[in-house]
Image 1 (tube, rainbow, N blue to C red):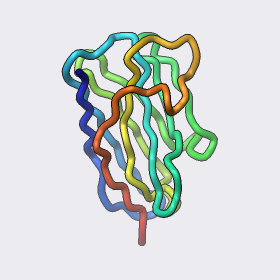
Image 2 (cartoon, rainbow, N blue to C red):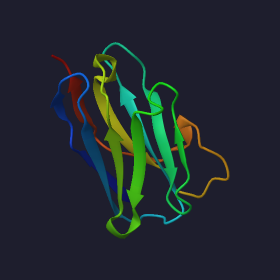
Image 3 (tube, one colour):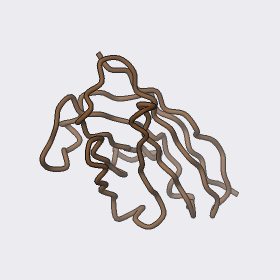
Amino acid sequence: QVQLVESGGGLVQPGGSLRLSCAASGRTFSSSTMGWFRVAPGKEREFVAAISRSSGSTYTAESVKGRFTISRDNAKNTVYLQMNSLKPEDTAVYYCAATARYYWYWPQENEYDYWGQGTQVTVSS
């Protein structure tokens, strides 16, 4: 059993920054993939970024490339999403997710096993 809790969301102006955190607890797997997804108003869930908990390798969606950075602190069982140069279109509920096993490739959305409750990010003037 793994529990994921996101935090750090809030209201920010366009061009601003925000840092999201995802704290994992329970029976976590040290070689899992951790990811961030988001659901914007009226849209389907989309992939944002992923990180290998073991190697530290990252994979970022083109829509946020150069603006968002995913990182991890394994000692704290926490994954972060640093969001810079935020745009109104970044407004969404952001979800943290984790796989239950190691993957040699970047897993698809349906291959993530655990999900957090989400944290709201609103980018507006």
